[in-house]
Image 1 (cartoon, rainbow, N blue to C red):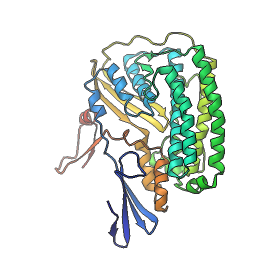
Image 2: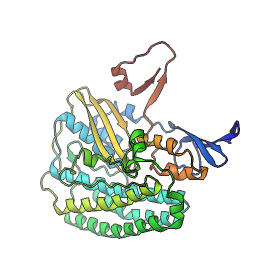
Image 3: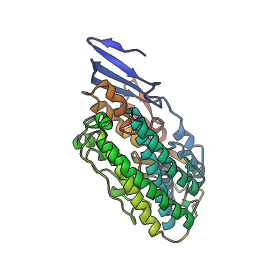
Image 4: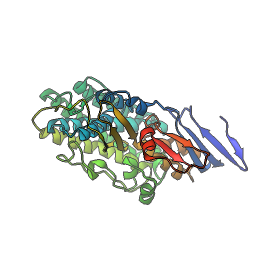
Length: 393
């Protein structure tokens, strides 16, 4: 698509296929010269029907399905789903299983943040940092593979516990890997805080105040980079975070640099929590039995994914199959911040602004919007819950 002229201004489209985007999304930026004066976002190009598919599979099968919502966040999706089903079933995973879930979750967070750092560096033209961070990412991927047998979809969870234990050899390997990564992460923190090229692309770009972040509903590092303390691990601890609490990493700069620093500092916090768990690993079983038929009811489970709050709404009809599984991912919450903070920046800043929220396009697209032309003004809650329809008159 080519830019189209509107009065004295132009609308510049980016996507759905574009060199700056690895996944399809469509953005239209209204520009006056090089200055952005308006922005719109259109999603919905990667709807995979996961939520509808879940209704035809039992809870065990859905555990594997939900891990495919996002490759980088596969474990946290499985954890959120497992916690919701366990709550409906009235069971709690053993303490050792909860600790292992937490270790894998924090290793996954390290994996996700290092991947993001490389993507952000690439979009900013800093390909050396991109290659360094992705090389070091192999360390945490090797650790996850040694634990689970997989480098992306770890499949650590069961409904009621976890599949594998951590032995002494694996414990020592994790500690050696964390020692190496801590050293590398200190280097990355110094680079992003001092390199003139990176600072020119991030410092003062995409500023969002704490009030804006709270108003727009931003979550995860996007919100914490603006001073808003939003972290489910702190606000509503789950799995092992009650026994091994974390400290929310917050920066007040509000720009892309602050969001970068938050993510790198979270690498150190993840390392600290993993070490604490390995030092005081609970003893006991890895799983408890869960009935095939989950009692009728509905629940909400919330966890802190690497990108922010991840929410699962699960409705059970008393059978082996869920009535409804609704997933709200953090990327959906953070999209509105782009259209709001883009105005006033240069068009060349848009790729960095997009990557600043660590977007996952495939995570978003599980909702349909129905616009009705008749005089009806109401839709039943049963319809909304069953079909996941957001209704606009």
